[in-house]
Length: 410
Ligand code: G
Ligand code: MN
Image 1 (cartoon, rainbow, N blue to C red):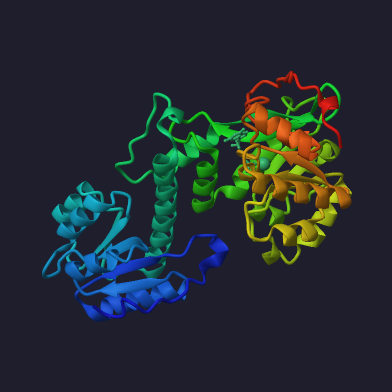
Image 2 (cartoon, helix red, strand yellow):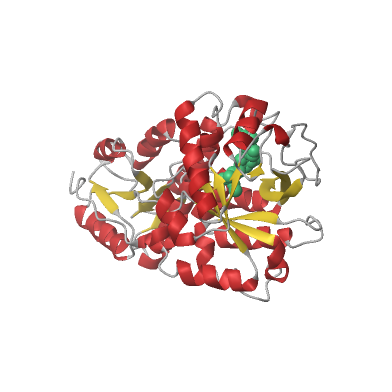
């Protein structure tokens, strides 16, 4: 095996792809090395193996996102290799490059689920392009796989997808075509607990994508995130929007660099004064050098800014000071069992106190029980959201919560 441990850090960060390496398998070493160099010049990390057995050993390292392989090799040939790979990992894209093109081996490769079949001498641009596409597909597949693994069975309903083949872009595109918005009420801690506004949340009618967070990861992996976020914002500005109360719209951090967001002519900018943009705390916001300027522009357009999921990341206070949000949303992990966990309760109390001193309102989100609800009121949160109040629905519901807040002193 040659060079299987030397990692070249991927410089392809602009594509937003997670790091990973492409495995190039060829018994003709100079060809493998040449191809790996071409990939690396285009910012794709590559590692080479001299035959199928070495390839399987490299695959054990776990960070391979695509395989480019010769077909005619000693030890373990290409068709045996793809069988072995897909027995373990059916979604790993395998591309074949062969020197002796014949219809039979091409047909066999396709039948075995090869992602692509190229002939030598290959066109470097074609290989790079095909590899980029293979990596994107892999990322889409991983997002779906994680969704499958992590989602409790009852959330699937009848349509539990089985992931046995590489999902196509058509599948993702279909899910993106079928998106719609749901609205979860946020209530104010005031007498009668009146409606304050709604958080707008993404859903897709495509049953293979029940988890919106995974749909977002897949859209990102497939290079469709900005497009998706623009559509969400346009839908949020559409005729179904809540009349008279603010709506909270989630922003992926990468959208902060999208000129459409700060365009005064965009549909959402037209109603900016009734929109709170949520920026998630999980983002590494310090990497956005122009963050301040973007936030200033958004505020000048009339938007309010909320820092979402506070307490979930590692940079909580940094983000709090960098963003100077109008509203902070406590991560639901801080709310969960807060009625039973005195440490958690004390932590939330100190966050609420700090926010109050800064003139920042606090939303407790993900409230699931009556005890969590009363604890959050007691601690002094200004706004409340969660299944205990109302689930997200397509209709704009107005929840009735029976709690006498005069019983709590502040
Ligand atoms: O990251 P963000 O805070 O935007 O996440 C909101 C997500 O949390 C949505 O997918 C929404 O459906 C979900 N959600 C809303 N209320 C609750 C709740 O009370 N409990 C749980 N577990 N999830 C909730
Ligand atoms: Mn949110």
